[in-house]
Length: 301
Picture 1 (tube, one colour):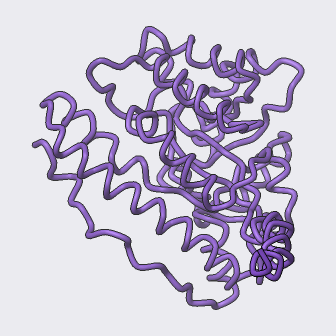
Picture 2 (cartoon, rainbow, N blue to C red):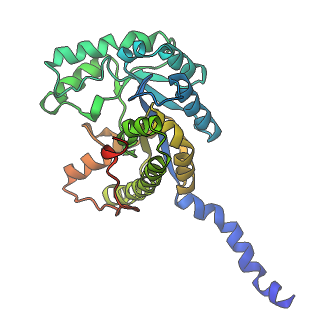
Picture 3 (cartoon, rainbow, N blue to C red):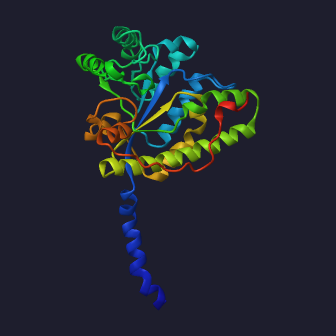
């Protein structure tokens, strides 16, 4: 008993300090989802509405206050439930933004005028569902801000009330989308399990790199903006991804809250940490992959 009394103050102090210790490793992060209502091929046995509902259920279960969905309106007609996906997103209380009508790459577009026309054509499907709410956020397709066209494009967007939806972290879910559909069609469960192992190891590495690189560039972990996609692979792995974010200290915020940080005042394409490092002449450290790289493109061919 004397032994327990001796250590009791130390044990008590550990319990009292544990919330602060946890907070020290925490970070704010906004969730964004590209390519609504359709991203990649539809895996057998799934529907686009079901994929959306899975995303919404998992986000809600993890206390995500906002998951900003970015719409390519040309894809609505690709699925019988394309409209239903967007309606379900809004019914869940989550906002929609513009990802251009046809996912047009600004730098490769025939002209700036052609690209801005694609932006305008993408507006009605979003605006109709966002009446009375702020929908004028644009996510650059391919995160390509236009190269030499960048300033003109930004001038156009700002003149028309748009804000750019930035990105700071992604887990390359799009790399696995096509292979997952192929492997489901072939009932290749071994390949799917190998994909999951590689992908989730990559999530761990990406989170570690994000924290390390943010500290390297800013001296702190800035509020993050996560990019993911409205695809079958993203849906089936989302519970594990959210669990990893939670374990890493994620605190979920809105896109506007994340981008109110001064780090997001640096315009450009790609991820904000990477481009800011380039402007500062910083050579970014990178975490080693937690598992051997998998040649996803060759799976289930």
